[in-house]
Image 1 (spheres, rainbow, N blue to C red):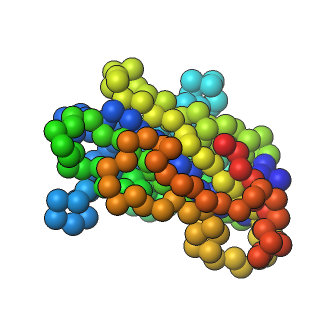
Image 2: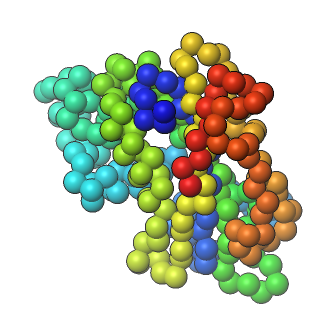
Length: 237
């Protein structure tokens, strides 16, 4: 069911990053100060897409991700041919650097933010642990327009489960996925995303987390939701 391109798929992804030193935040993107002396780790959606594109390239999938090569190909072939030929453009669409959309993307990601503050570090510690939460969406209307297939969605879930691995240049930073919940429903069902995302609860500790086991993650059991029978929940990790 999670690989059906004619259905809506909305998902919650949890991943962890260990041993992230404040002296080298390149792996985390930039921390964001939300309040005085309280900082959360952020990973931007662009960074998630870029990491996935690199993973897909390693898996020998056709990926086109650099300007001006993309612009030249778009001018020569058009949107339909680019979607047919390149996995990342078919799934994530194409936005011109000036800001206007050239190809609508059926797959969208939110900003990933740590569940608890991780900066500044306390008690003289020189490394941080962060559990990050990200939301994502697959829209079947754009998927149909771009020619997304069941195998394309299967590759997306596989990529999300494997992309969070440490860069050897950033050792000893460690990253891994800790959970992927996919809510699937018919396109005609007007179900607010927030209602579904709220079903996966990641209560904040309000202190410096040390490991994933410090958290108590709560989610409905896989299958049709009792409160919303038209929604099917799949836990992929």
